[in-house]
Image (cartoon, rainbow, N blue to C red):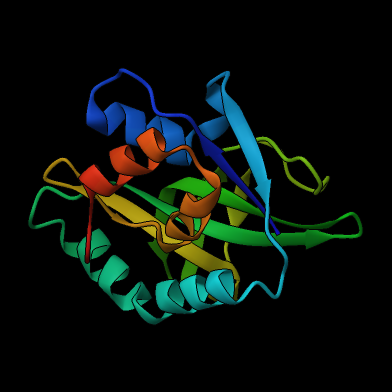
Length: 163
């Protein structure tokens, strides 16, 4: 599995989180972190994200507490391999989910940044949104903490909250 993350920036929290996590290819300090498909911590994080997906959809539909900047992490596979992408500008209608690919591929060739894709719910591997200036979700990022500098981990921990 390939997961993309970025170094923190000096932008306001909302903009930095969105650009760091959802718009990662728009910045110049991105880094792809490889994780084995069967990594137990990542498998557990994806399971937690999938288990809590109804919380994401409830917030997406109601937006009662200032929720914004909704994004889904989507597993995409082609003959070149599997990669996980953030999709933003989500639309959920008539039982279908659509979003825009928001980072450049490193492995997969069948999508590119800016493509509108239909997202099968079975391919959702994580989710996030902002609520009252805090990051909700993004369970897979926590697995990457062990490979990140302490300052970066401390930054993320300071803005992350449970759903």
